[in-house]
Length: 345
Image 1 (tube, rainbow, N blue to C red):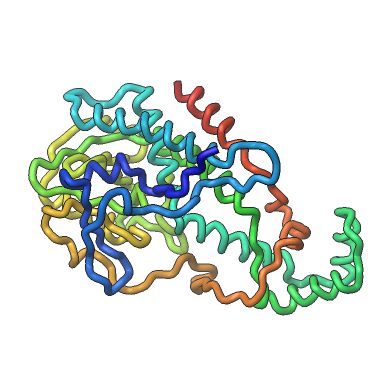
Image 2 (cartoon, rainbow, N blue to C red):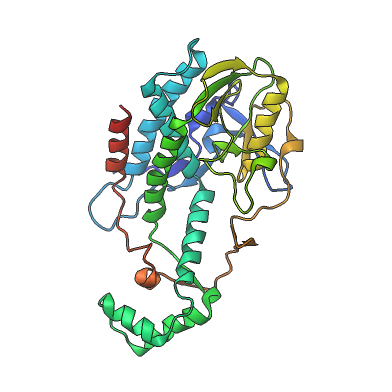
């Protein structure tokens, strides 16, 4: 069986809509002092084996990549129709395909994977806080494990020195979450009011963290971020001259021509929201001034950055005490995607 090794976490068909005739992009490196570079679409936003399933038994480890390829092929046709059609809004089937594409894109990046892993590590450690030897012994017996003195001692060491350890989930867990959460994101996006903005002049950039969310600072609630449900605006560039704007449900849907300031605003959101890369046509005006230079934290817990500093890795004890995570086998991603496609049809 042939196994695809190079997996694009921003699809090639999408990046081509921002590239020149030689399929080249100007790539800005966000949160870095490095200058932009010119690179081919095939070499942008790519990781080796990123969507490959870790299977110990029979099955196709490329099934997720293959299913994503099918969704991308359908999405490419929809985006082409949306950007070239004179009528708006799109048909319900096209709307469903595009929403699925955006929802999965929101989840399918290396930074989302790292954030998922960091959150899992943090949550697991919370369940070891205030652990006692009697509680550990009782819990081990409940799950059918032998409460040996060595294991009790290890559990107590985790409880007392959590930063010495790093909990690692099964590698397929992120892929399962990527699909299930991505399809839920698609539902939320599909329920919003869609506007199609066209720019006859200034061109859009795009990035590696899409869609991008915005809520005016005066409308944000204390101690809360800008989420998919509460965001005032959600932006998703479709190509250099078209952007999909998603507003709260209930607003009339329309297509309109953008002003220069509108394009600049969307580009600034993309630049500030991107994890590592911002992509732009090589001939479009530079946007260096928009690209953040300072490093960013992957995530924050209690307003303190989480760093990857744990000295040891333990996988065998990770599921013992946490009611949220469990030992997981390969996700049935083909069934999840097929069910979602049937619902949208």
